[in-house]
Amino acid sequence: MGVDDFVGQAHVLGPGKPLRRLLEGHSLHSIILWGPPGTGKTTLARLVAGAAGAAYESLSAVLVGVKDIREVVERAKQTRATTGRATVLFLDEVHRFNKAQQDTFLPFVEDGTLIFVGATTENPSFEVNGALLSRARVYVLKGLTAGDLAQMVDRALMDPVRGLGERQLSIDAVARQRLAEAADGDGRRLLNLVEVAADLAQAEGTTVITEAMAEELAQGGVRRFDKGGDAFYDQISALHKSVRGSDPDAALYWFCRMLDGGCDPLYVGRRVLRMASEDIGNADPRGLSIATDALAAFERLGSPEGELALAQAVVYLAVAPKSNAVYAAYKAARADAESHGSLPVPMAIRNAPTRLMKELGHGDGYRYDHDEGGHAAGQRYFPDEMSPRTYYNPVPRGLEIKIREAVLRRRGGG
Image (cartoon, rainbow, N blue to C red; front, side):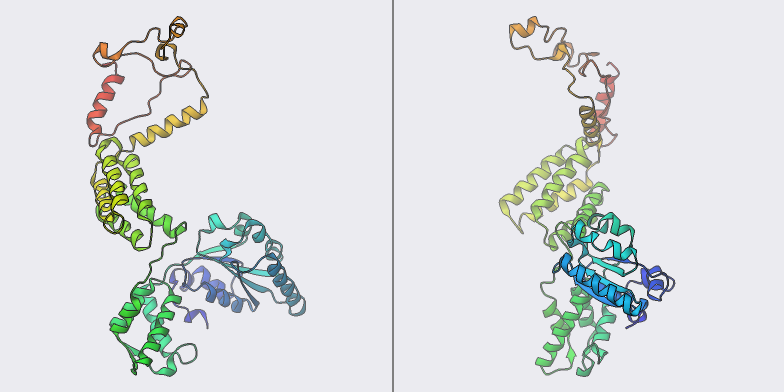
């Protein structure tokens, strides 16, 4: 198989693209392939070995340890000594190795004994140690498109050597599309579906994979969603930003995508509560109450009935006026509290429940705001050692329009 036979990843394998140049023998170097399952990482590793004219070793970080790596290194040294060839070491699931295990490769990548090809579904910025990352170039792979997957179906059915060509099968257009949709960007999953569909056709005594067969196989397909992985955090980020951006339709879409992928609705509910304070705030304080009620409703009703309450909260927050003024104020006040240490409370606003405390001056000079029309202008509440700060700046949206008027009037001494 050559690079022209590879399906998908045109953004890195198209003419003149960097990974294609590597596979054509230019500037061979260690690489890390980052992308979802079934996008061709293992195949690309074999193509790298072929381009380098190198020996090929394959390990899975799920199954091996340092001992196995050392054995590969010894074979690679022997290969280099006897043939002059380097060895391509493909390590699948590289993110499963800890720092010490990853460090094992470094000297041999550095001296050229190994051309390292790591594969990961997780962000290498977090999962691959810096020393190894600096010696390898990262290529980001994407889930296969519907067109890519349809092409793979036809190849699988026609190729007599690597596919099912000897069975003389065909597939109708709707069935091809349905299998491609069920694969959800995963080429390995697609090929498994095609193989099962071929067996099903054979069992029914036909040479045509029909829409009904494809529909049967597509039932119960699971979308890409790995709790704790990049897909998880990318999708909750998309939901949060759609709410912040006041797009109820996109917010609902990402909410449903997360549920469809198997996310715990309670987690989404807790994040919706956070959005209500962080992005809506006092522009519409009802948002927090609605989010709280929605979470309580889900806890009482469970799934799927309670999911509608969460959807209602998501839509409400998306269309509500937005303010992050409290969020920004909280962060600024928290930073001051952490940096200024334990400054004493001013005497005027200290608690004075006993005669001794009063004799010590606690509460001296305090002006009761209600006696002065609800606001004692000029009274200080910050520690004496700090100049007064302005953290909260209400925005001119929603209820904060009125709050802003009142806050500015009081700060101005009115």
